[in-house]
Figure 1: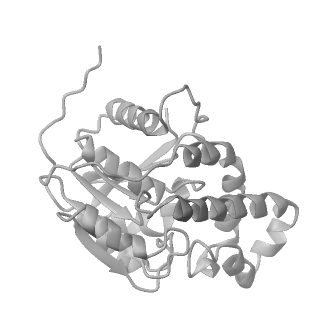
Figure 2: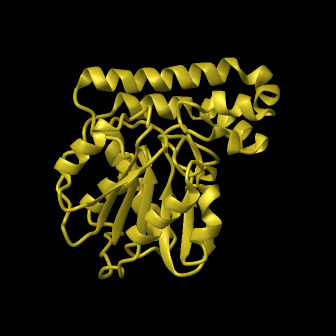
Figure 3: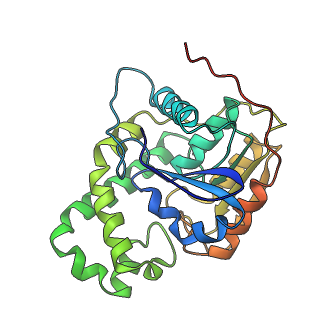
Length: 270
């Protein structure tokens, strides 16, 4: 089972973090969300406290879909709302395309790069991040103990990394190193998102204007690929915007998941 937390009450909203991250990425917004939603935080396979991601010859997309559907069934989640950042946003879109959820809200979802050159840039960013995090382990507590150190360490991912607590920053850095095998497997299996989504399932796509990982031009590609979605700009936010603008991200997530849940899904449990 995926490592998870369930907090609050109301319509269930499953939050899915990005590649190399962990469920604590959502902590800056959880308290506010839990006032109106039952928030379900998960660690993806190979990330945080979840079991390893085990390649079995199938596409990564299929593996993640099956794991997510099994989690919904185990937790009694009947077509929950879902929201995700980066890889988590891509998983949310896939869940909507598979008709597993009542709404999908995404923050810089993966899958809208132009070509292999752009994808090579994304791969290089994560190679740099994981390599630097690995090398920095011996001195990480000292570096991340200062606000300038946290801002520098997380500058590719967010605009206000200095607002992270030293404990959260260190946990994220160590989590990135721990997730490296899963990260490499997922990136190796990456491909653009090009699936239709039933217009009855509300979709929101939000993008930070200072995203240095999935560059903001991709928001335009997402707008063209998903014309029925609500498209939102996150001013002065980076790739992981949850701490860059707490109020705005909470607003986007609540509005995106404000729709009544759809009819119960039918699962094949044979």
